[in-house]
Image 1 (tube, rainbow, N blue to C red):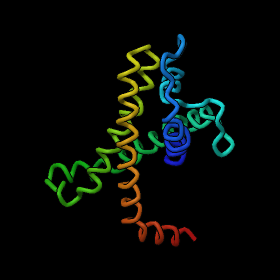
Image 2: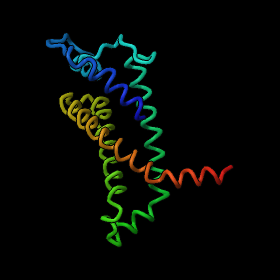
Image 3: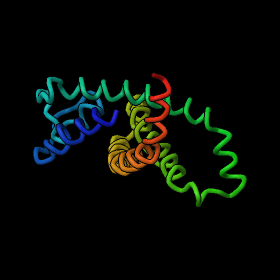
Length: 162
């Protein structure tokens, strides 16, 4: 999910940002309009895949990861309840911020899909996409910190499996 998102952001969005098209002809889809406004070249290939391939890969991995995160939250729901009811938020600030960032990044990632499917306002859709891009960069940092903080647990748990 992170890799495909970064490829989309760095390989297509940022790489094509100097090629904005002004006065584009009539556009059939908001996704295509977005690509044209951002200057995304649909013929560009990054690591052997086109923009559409990377976008589809990103969407599938997002849905899969979101289901895993819903399950992860379900498993740890008692922990969340204890942290909130016993006012332990300050002591668990990093995980709470990570959880909030994930929810915000997920929401700002899913909302543009719904706007596109409903034929909504493309400017609002693009705003959500840009917010999503910025939030996910911060989320990546918190995910790395989350895994690093638990590296010893991962190592000992893996060792027990052998």
